[in-house]
Image (cartoon, rainbow, N blue to C red; front, side, top):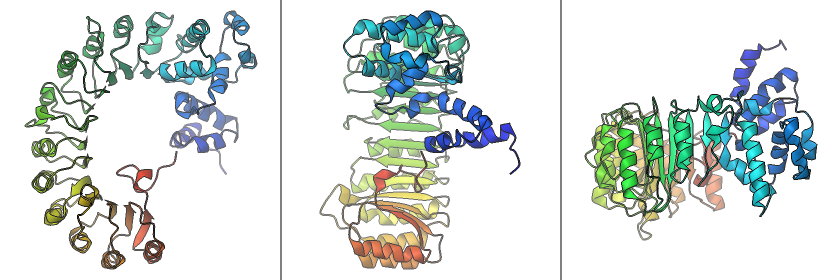
Length: 476
C-alpha cells in the first residue's frame, strides 16, 4: 500500500474523533499515525474519561510538573510514577479546559482534606494555563472563585476562547477578568439556579455585551423560582447581538419579547422543565430565518403561532411531551403544512380524528424524509388507533423521499394491519422503521420476512436507544 500524505491521513483520522475505540486501535500502527491521533485524543480528554480512571489521567497531567513543583510528592505519594518524562506535551494539545471535571477528579482522589485539594487544584490550573496552550472551550464550575485570569500566560491561553459554560454564581472578579481577555466567544452556556443572587455589577452581562460575534446562547434555569430581574437584564444584553445570534436554547419562559429582535435566528430550542409555564411572550413573534424548532412541554398554541410567523425555511420540527386537544392538534398540523414547504423531519402527536390533516401535510411537504408519530393512546389509554386508516394514508400520500418512520404508541397494531402496510409499500424505497416494543415472536417473524423481501431495510423496537431523528445509530 502506498504511503498516505500526512495531511490526508489527518483528515481521514479526524473523521474518527468521536469513535474512541477506533482511534485507540490506530495508535500502534506506526509513529506517524500516533503523532496524528494523540492530538485528536487530547483535544478534549475529558470526553473519554471514565469513572474510576481519574488517577490515570491525573498521573499523565502531573508528569508535566516542573522540577520546582515536584516536591509535591511529599503530599501526594501516589503520583510518584507520573514523574517520568512524557512522550508528548499532552497539555499543549488540549483545547477544552474543563475545570468542572478537573475538580471532580481531584475530589475523587482526595477526600475531606481541603488543604491538599487546594494545593492540587492550584498546581493543575497552572499546568494547563500556560503561554503555549490555546483553549477554545472553557467550563467553569458552580461557585468557582479561583482567579484563573491572573495565572501567568492566561491572556495568551484564553484569548481565542470560542465557548464558555458558566453560571451566575461564579465570582464576579473572574468574569470581569475574562472580559479583559476574551472577546471572540461565539457560544455561551449560562446556568442559573433557584433565587441565585448575581453580583451587583452584573459581570456576566458585561461579558456577553463585550463579545464581537455571539452565535449561540443556551440559558439553562434549573428551577422555576429564579430572579426575574436578572433574567430581564440578561435578555436585554442579548439584543445587542440580535443580528448575529443563530441558535438560542432556553429552559425558562422569556420575561420579555427579546426574541423578536433575532431576525437571523436559525435554531430555537424550548424546554419547559416545569411543565406549566405559559410562554406567552413567544406568541406573535416573527422569526423569518428559523430552520429548526425543538420544543418540550411548551403549549401548542404558542408553537403554532411561532410556526405561522416564519418564512418557509423550517426543515426540522420536534414537538414533544405536551398533551393537547383535537382543535389544537389540528391547528399545529395545519400551521406546519401551510408554512413549512421545505420540511424534512417532523416529530408530533397525531390524534385519530386528524389523520386527514396528516394526509394534507404529506401532500404539502414534499421534502419530508423522516416522520416520528406520537399516538393519542400514549395520553389517553382507552383510545383505539385506526391503524388501517393511518397506513393507507402513509402508503398513498407519502412523498417519494419519505421512508424513515418512528411510531410511539401504547397499543400494538394488529399483525394484519402491519402486513397490509408493508405489502402496499413494495414499490417504494426500503423502509427504516422504529417502534415501541412489540415483544411477541409473531411480530418479529413478520418483520424479518419483509426484511428478507427488501421492503424493510432496518427495524428496531427500542426508540429510546436512538436520537429522535436518528434511524441508523452513530458509532461512538
